[in-house]
Image 1: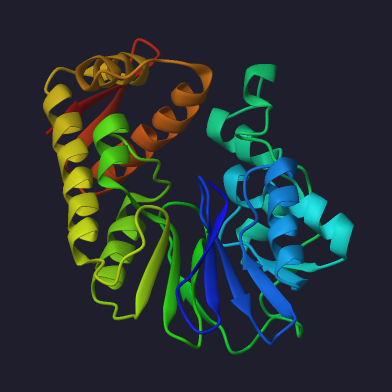
Image 2: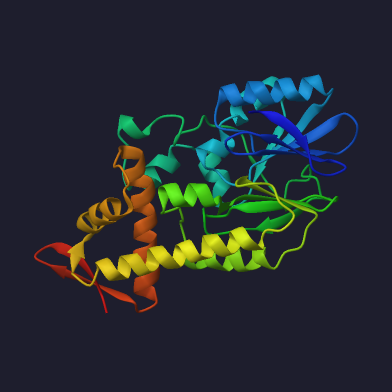
Length: 292
């Protein structure tokens, strides 16, 4: 874990739970693509950079989930580096309490205010900032989170952030986190059509052929959608639906899983309702969902 791997003339990644990309602008200066999940990850990254004689010029956050921005504050304090992000991700990175608040739908209890969902705040600039390395191609990858991006380096390595989950992860957890299902499917179509020397997803194997795992992720969305519509042949409220999905997929409820899977299921419900597949009716002061 936290091993440095070279995938291009100037592109590397650190193999860790959420892979961290490295782009080398010259012999001594590098940019990180994400920063890991906490201060300890930041320390390990800094050690790797020091061992290679690299100075940290900046961090490009693909999105603001805590496991991608958790090392920001430590690295920024230690090096004075700039941090860059896109759109709404800037706000979530500056004010990380937004993530557990958004997931829970209110002020999060202590069980949700920990490093897995709540990173330390850091100072962030927009991608339009004059110091952003212009030779990097920014690829919109919306769907998993609000304004998530990927990065293509000049040596044709594409860092894909969280738009792809590994087969083992999907088989274990079944319902991968998605904010906007329609945008997520559009992103999968975009990624499937891409060509690159190497693809580096944050949570799947590095590969030169992304099509197979993209298709597996797309099929899983279809499976979850079908499951929800099947369950909703019997009208039920959200909490009952969520329990039934946990039971049928063999998942274990916890505060973290409640907000992550729960938020995703609500996103599926919005997508299915907007596409005329299910309907919502208020009955006896309960919001009831059922398939059409």
